[in-house]
Length: 240
Image 1 (cartoon, rainbow, N blue to C red):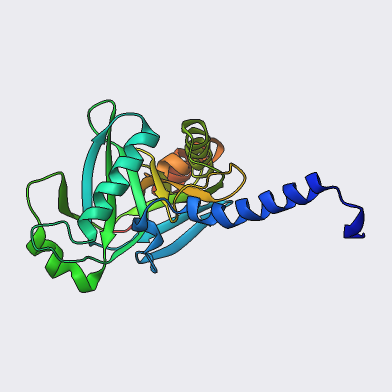
Image 2: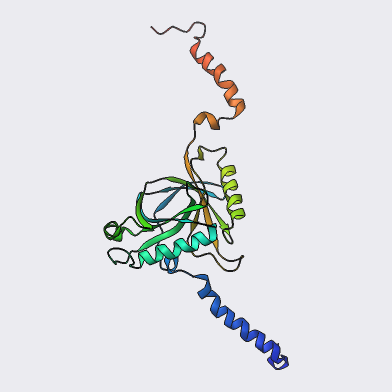
């Protein structure tokens, strides 16, 4: 295709598109909190059920804050607050390394959100020294088991609800059952365009009662099999 035949308007559109391409990457990372995270927290995948992964986390220290409002606005506020704290706006004026993911869960009170991000192991001592009873606190998170699913697009409430439903369906006939509320996990700031980026939804898991995952037809046979085992067959010696 020859460029000679293009109109000035086409040339203007091409230039505008080139400028937008240059601006978009900068608009994607609106906070240095996640942009500065080069590593993720330690997690082990212990099982897979379709697109859902069962992961085991480890005990660690996290920066946590509580924000009220709509989920998106609360998340942006929390990101800025945690970023400022990690960059040195704390009682020790020390910079703290953080680890992905950025986690958002519903708090006990309606309209409030608990938001946190892990502290790098090398900075835990500094984090504990800088802890104070302010808007950002240093909390310990015990090891836990999570069912995690990755979803493309932006973390809207509807998308998160569908992801939570998918997780519950995936583990319905497994040895795991939900043991808490769903949480949003971000490894990068949400993208401006809907078709770019992704996020994770996780639900805490606990081992299920083995009887709960036994099929009905097998449970019906259990009493009969137990009776057969307890009743001695003819000619068999009795145990004294």
